[in-house]
Structures are given as structure tokens and as C-alpha cells.
Amino acid sequence: MSHAAVEVTDLVMRYGDVTAVDGLSLRVEPGTVTSILGPNGAGKTTTIETCEGFRRPHSGRVRVLGLDPVADAAELRPRVGVMLQSGGAWLGVRAEEMLRHMASLHAHPLDVSALIARLGMSSFARTSYRRLSGGERQRLSLAMAIVGRPELLFLDEPSAGLDPQSRRATWDLVAELREHGVTTVLTTHFMDEAEVLSDFVHIVDSGRVIASGSPGELSGDGSRNTIRVTARPGLALGPIADRLPAGSSIEEPVPGQYVVTGDVCPPLVTAVARWFGDQDVLVESMLVERQSLEDRFLELTGKALR
Amino acid sequence: MTPLDLSPAPGAAPRGAMLRSQTAMELKLLLRNGEQVLLTIVIPLILLLAGTRSDRIVDLGPGRPIDVITPGVLALAVLSTSFTSLAIATGFERRYGVLKRLGASPLPRSGLVIGKITAVVLVEVAQLALLSGVALLLGWEPAAGVLPWLWLALLAVLGTSAFGSLALLIAGTLRAEATLALANLVYVVLLVAGAVLVPLDRYPDAAQSVLALLPSAALAEGLRDTFAAGAPHWSALAVLAGWTAVAGLLTTRSFTWE
Image (tube, rainbow over all chains, first blue to last red; front, side, top):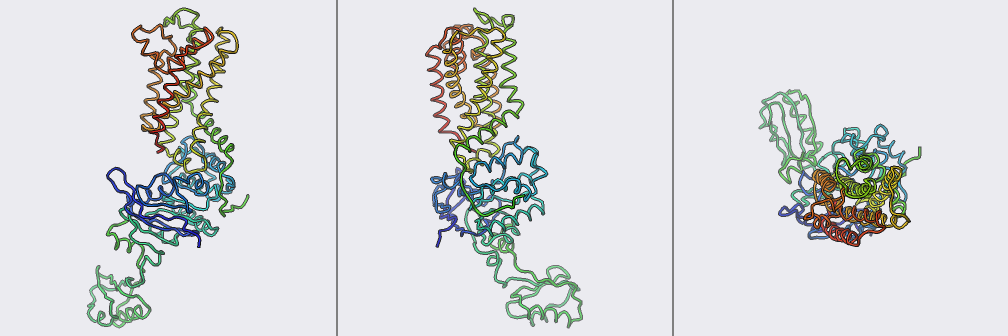
């Protein structure tokens, strides 16, 4: 059994009187994509930057590839790819020049031209960093993180500021890196990103991990899923409530919108559809909704994510 | 087009290759920056040309103006590159996360510093060669022999160490805008009142003993003595070494990378 790619145990980080990370523990298995999900100010960046060796833990323990990120920095730096949340390049440097410079610091870098083509950077390869848009800077920053062919990647909000196409391209690349055995740790405050991309999600709030698991596990077991029915408003719900299985309920929060909550299974769906039919009411739409990671997050923290 | 092989193959480039790459990058960015070229080449050149006529503007004391002004202009060239230029560039590298990003790359921190120093030294070699050449064409008569030129090299190294440490001290503690303002202000103040172009003995008697402790005065006086008499006074070397020691110590204690 090889050790964890990243292991954080009881990490505490303070800035003056502010405790940014408050006893955070998490583990990243080799070869996985792991998301650290949480709202702004939850301690995501502080945690990831401590793993990158930029900060020394005030207390607790951090191990990256079995090594100490500060004491063993020289050994770790070539093996770990880093994408900062912002900045990281000279204003006067051209995108391709910056990428070639990063490549030159590594022993077996990716082919820079091929990487530029792959990430759709050709149109701005000769543009100075000063003139790049936010999304172009993000793509360059991602390219800089992977050009040295690291075995472990830390991506701090990799798709912030990206248009939908670039975002999809970033996701595809992370998935492909995973197929090649690269471990990725990313921070995000996008639910869909965590849900689509990761094998494992740690939900962080106020400097602590409040839930961990695969996206499926975190979204729940189905007991809180819903069926949403659009039909004529104002139906008497007493009769149907009697016919629903125990643990289920129906309400009409908005006129014409009926919400059935419970263990959503095929018989329940059939029962609901039949009841509307028996009333001679035309169902205009019927939607089965799985509880999302977002619902779960709201339930855990009572806070909306941005 | 080569297909992308995304499988991990980590490793640092050989140290020499990293240093060459980093130094080349520093030089390229320096030369691309018009203000820096103005500061390091154009201004000293103008002052050298104007200095040959300086007897009409300011009394430089005994001796031909070109012989008095040239060592001062060489000192100014060292000041502009190792202090003002280095401080501003490093301040903005810190501000824009360049130092942080390179700190996460295989390039060791010592490599980052060596790259900077090498770039500064190469620019200075070019500056000193160009300015000395122009001065000789204008009729500058330095003390004879190779020795003054060796003293020039030593004084330039000491001056660069002192000014470079001060530059990193400012750039590593203040915000980039404050660094920009302070580095330019110090440049102008030392140029006017730091005994760079005007010899120390032209300043009021009361001020001389204080001004003599400035790194600018030590470097410029050292160069004037060298090219007039063949060697600097030991006090010039001591003052520059002292500034290097103090600023170097403070810099290593206070420098933050972001």
C-alpha cells in the first residue's frame, strides 16, 4: 500500500488574530482527482498553499508525496505542478516565452508547441502577459503547472474566469492527466466542477472539513430526492397524500408546481403519474431531481456558494 | 506536431541550464523595458556629455571637467542598475506573484538571486564599457596602467553588493508602488546631494563627514581617487562593505516573497 499523495492532519493556520484553517485534516489518494470545495474565505487557498510549501503550518502536519513541503522543498518542487490563483508571470513576458521558460527549468518537459495547440493558446502565444484576458492568463497558468510533467498537481481555482468552452477544455485535460496517473488536487467553489471532475470531494467551511466523500456519496442516497410536477393549480392534495408510500410527502409551494419529496423509486413515480391521471389532470411536465452537491452543501452549512 | 505525452516524468533541469535560462530571461525583460534602458544608459550618457561643459553650470573644483565627471558617471551607472532598476523590477515581480511562482518551480531560490545578480553585472559591464569608451573619445585621461581598471571592477562589485542589498531590502518589504517611488526618489536625491557627480570636497565642510558615509559618495569618491591617483582610499571600501553587511543582514531577515 503506497502512502497518500497528500496527507494533512489537524492543520491550523493563523494570520494575526484570524484563524484561516482550524484543525483541518484530509487525505488525497494517489491517481485521483480530489476537490476542495468551499465558499470564499473557507481556507482552501491557505490549505493548498501550505501543501505547496509557501507557508509553514502553525500546528498540525502536512505531508506531500510522503515529504515535508517546507523542509523537502528542493526534492518536491520538480515533482509537483502548481497553478496559483492569480499572477505568476512578468507583465512584459509573452505567453509562449513564459511557458518555454518554465519548460527550461524541467528535465523532461512537454512539447511546448503541442501544449499551446492543445490548450488553444496559439492566438495569444506572442501576446505579452500584460495584455492577456483573465481567461487567457488562467490557461497559461494551467499550462505552466503541467509543462514540467509533474506527478502531483495543485490547481487553485483552475476555471475561475474561464468561458464555458475553456472550462470544458480544462476539465478534459484534468481527466486525461488522471488517466495518465497524475494526481490532482484542486480548489473550487463551483459545485458542478467538483461533481463532474473529482473522484473525491472535501467540503471545507470556516477552516475545517465538514464532509468528505465521492460526489455521489455526498449528494445523498436518494432519500431526499424530489419529483417536480407542473399541472393545473389548486388541486386538493389530501387524497394523494394517503396513497403515497410512508416517508413521502407532497406540497404545492408555488401554484401549479407540485413537489413530491421522498425515496424516489419507479413505483413512486408511477403512483404520482397515475394519481394525476385519475383526476383527469394533464401533467405538463414531470421532473425527477436528484439532490445535488449544492443542496447538500446548503444543508451542511446553511450558506449559499457563489 | 508531436503528440502530448501527459504521463508524469518529473525532474529538474541541470542547475547550469536553469541559471542560464533565468539570467537570459531577466536580461531580455530588462532590455525590453524602455524606462530601464533610459535610466541605465541614456541618462548617464547625457550627463557625461553635459559634464564636459559642466564648468559653466557647477564648479567641480580643480582638474579638467571630463576627468572629474567621468568617475561620477560610472558610479551613477552602477547606482542606477544595481539599486533603482533592481529594486523596481523585484518589487513588481513580488507584486505579480512571479517570485512566488518561480519559488514553486525547480529553480532554487539561490538560482533566482544568482540570475538577478548575473543580469545586473552583465548590464553594468556593458554600461561601464560604453561610458568609459565615450569618455575616452571625449578626451578623458584616467590614471595610467591596468590597476585603476581592476580597482574599478572591485569598487563596482562592492557598490553593486551594497546597492543591490538595499534594493532587495526595499523591494522585499514595501509594496511595489512604494518601492517604485522610493527607488526613484533615492536615485534623484543621491544624484543631486549624494556626492555622485560633484566631488565631496565641493560640499559644505559640515556636510562632508556625513555625506562620506553614503554608499554613493564612497563609490564615486573611490572611483575619482582611483582614476586620479591610481587607487581608492580604504575608507571607501570600508563604507561600501559596511552598507553591504547591514543591508544584507536586514534583507535576509525581512524579505518576503509575496
